[in-house]
Image: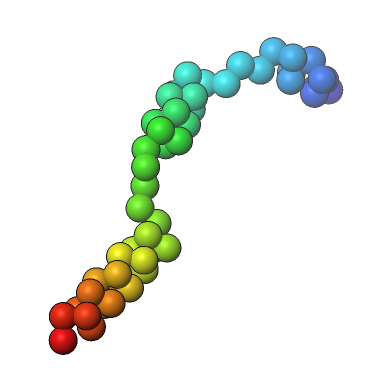
Length: 50
């Protein structure tokens, strides 16, 4: 039978996972809110130019 407590003590995360996590968190990604803000900004600037 598998002793889960012992297996968890032996567990070491893969270096690939740690590297990927660092790369993901270090990037400044544009999300939908940023895109919508930019669209609203452009729309309001066009309205002012009229």
